[in-house]
Length: 126
Image (cartoon, rainbow, N blue to C red; front, side):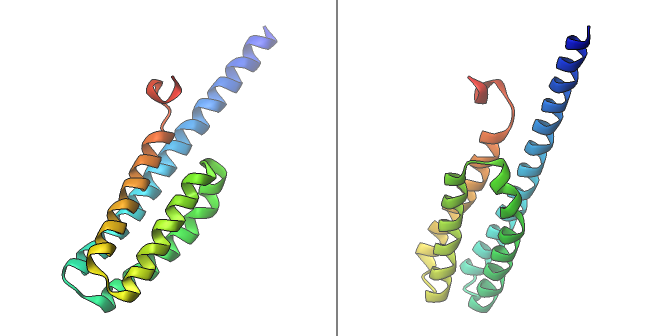
Protein backbone atom coordinates (compact mmCIF):
# COMPACT_ATOMS: atom_id res chain seq x y z
CA UNK A 1 0.00 0.00 0.00
CA UNK A 2 2.83 2.41 0.80
CA UNK A 3 4.37 1.77 -2.58
CA UNK A 4 1.09 2.64 -4.31
CA UNK A 5 0.81 5.90 -2.34
CA UNK A 6 4.44 6.81 -3.09
CA UNK A 7 3.97 6.12 -6.81
CA UNK A 8 0.73 8.13 -6.86
CA UNK A 9 2.39 11.09 -5.13
CA UNK A 10 5.35 10.91 -7.52
CA UNK A 11 3.00 10.77 -10.53
CA UNK A 12 1.02 13.81 -9.37
CA UNK A 13 4.23 15.69 -8.63
CA UNK A 14 5.61 14.83 -12.07
CA UNK A 15 2.42 15.86 -13.86
CA UNK A 16 2.18 19.07 -11.83
CA UNK A 17 5.73 20.05 -12.68
CA UNK A 18 5.18 19.18 -16.34
CA UNK A 19 2.07 21.36 -16.37
CA UNK A 20 3.92 24.27 -14.71
CA UNK A 21 6.84 23.86 -17.12
CA UNK A 22 4.53 23.99 -20.15
CA UNK A 23 2.61 27.00 -18.84
CA UNK A 24 5.78 28.90 -18.02
CA UNK A 25 7.38 28.20 -21.40
CA UNK A 26 4.23 29.10 -23.33
CA UNK A 27 3.75 32.32 -21.36
CA UNK A 28 7.34 33.48 -21.64
CA UNK A 29 7.70 32.48 -25.29
CA UNK A 30 4.57 34.52 -26.05
CA UNK A 31 6.10 37.52 -24.26
CA UNK A 32 9.30 37.17 -26.28
CA UNK A 33 7.39 36.65 -29.53
CA UNK A 34 5.30 39.75 -28.80
CA UNK A 35 8.47 41.75 -28.26
CA UNK A 36 9.80 40.43 -31.58
CA UNK A 37 6.53 41.52 -33.20
CA UNK A 38 7.01 45.02 -31.75
CA UNK A 39 10.45 45.11 -33.38
CA UNK A 40 8.97 43.90 -36.67
CA UNK A 41 6.38 46.69 -36.67
CA UNK A 42 9.05 49.31 -35.99
CA UNK A 43 11.22 47.89 -38.78
CA UNK A 44 8.35 47.98 -41.27
CA UNK A 45 7.76 51.63 -40.41
CA UNK A 46 11.55 52.21 -40.49
CA UNK A 47 11.62 53.80 -37.04
CA UNK A 48 15.23 52.86 -36.33
CA UNK A 49 15.49 54.51 -32.91
CA UNK A 50 12.38 52.61 -31.86
CA UNK A 51 13.90 49.42 -33.27
CA UNK A 52 17.02 49.93 -31.12
CA UNK A 53 14.87 50.49 -28.03
CA UNK A 54 12.74 47.42 -28.73
CA UNK A 55 15.80 45.24 -29.37
CA UNK A 56 17.27 46.36 -26.05
CA UNK A 57 14.00 45.43 -24.33
CA UNK A 58 14.06 42.03 -26.08
CA UNK A 59 17.60 41.40 -24.85
CA UNK A 60 16.60 42.35 -21.28
CA UNK A 61 13.51 40.15 -21.38
CA UNK A 62 15.48 37.23 -22.78
CA UNK A 63 18.22 37.70 -20.17
CA UNK A 64 15.58 37.56 -17.45
CA UNK A 65 13.96 34.35 -18.73
CA UNK A 66 17.05 32.59 -20.05
CA UNK A 67 18.23 31.54 -16.60
CA UNK A 68 15.06 29.56 -15.97
CA UNK A 69 14.86 28.23 -19.52
CA UNK A 70 18.35 26.74 -19.13
CA UNK A 71 16.92 24.48 -16.44
CA UNK A 72 13.90 23.44 -18.50
CA UNK A 73 14.90 22.99 -22.14
CA UNK A 74 17.67 21.65 -24.35
CA UNK A 75 20.68 23.96 -24.45
CA UNK A 76 20.87 23.72 -28.25
CA UNK A 77 17.48 25.41 -28.46
CA UNK A 78 18.72 28.13 -26.10
CA UNK A 79 21.80 28.62 -28.30
CA UNK A 80 19.60 28.93 -31.40
CA UNK A 81 17.51 31.62 -29.71
CA UNK A 82 20.66 33.41 -28.50
CA UNK A 83 22.03 33.39 -32.04
CA UNK A 84 18.77 34.72 -33.51
CA UNK A 85 18.65 37.56 -30.98
CA UNK A 86 22.30 38.38 -31.66
CA UNK A 87 21.61 38.52 -35.41
CA UNK A 88 18.59 40.76 -34.81
CA UNK A 89 20.73 43.09 -32.72
CA UNK A 90 23.46 43.28 -35.36
CA UNK A 91 21.07 43.78 -38.29
CA UNK A 92 19.24 46.51 -36.35
CA UNK A 93 22.53 48.36 -35.88
CA UNK A 94 23.19 48.09 -39.63
CA UNK A 95 19.57 48.96 -40.46
CA UNK A 96 19.30 45.97 -42.82
CA UNK A 97 15.53 45.84 -43.19
CA UNK A 98 15.10 42.63 -45.21
CA UNK A 99 17.60 40.57 -43.23
CA UNK A 100 16.21 41.92 -39.97
CA UNK A 101 12.67 40.88 -40.89
CA UNK A 102 13.97 37.43 -41.81
CA UNK A 103 15.81 37.10 -38.49
CA UNK A 104 12.71 38.20 -36.55
CA UNK A 105 10.64 35.57 -38.35
CA UNK A 106 13.26 32.96 -37.45
CA UNK A 107 13.18 33.98 -33.79
CA UNK A 108 9.40 33.86 -33.66
CA UNK A 109 9.45 30.38 -35.21
CA UNK A 110 12.06 29.15 -32.72
CA UNK A 111 10.05 30.47 -29.77
CA UNK A 112 6.76 28.94 -30.89
CA UNK A 113 8.40 25.66 -31.90
CA UNK A 114 10.17 25.34 -28.57
CA UNK A 115 6.97 25.95 -26.63
CA UNK A 116 5.16 23.36 -28.77
CA UNK A 117 7.92 20.77 -28.27
CA UNK A 118 7.92 21.12 -24.50
CA UNK A 119 4.18 20.64 -23.94
CA UNK A 120 3.39 17.25 -22.44
CA UNK A 121 1.34 15.44 -25.07
CA UNK A 122 1.22 12.01 -26.65
CA UNK A 123 2.72 13.28 -29.90
CA UNK A 124 5.75 14.59 -27.99
CA UNK A 125 6.18 11.37 -26.05
CA UNK A 126 6.04 8.90 -28.94
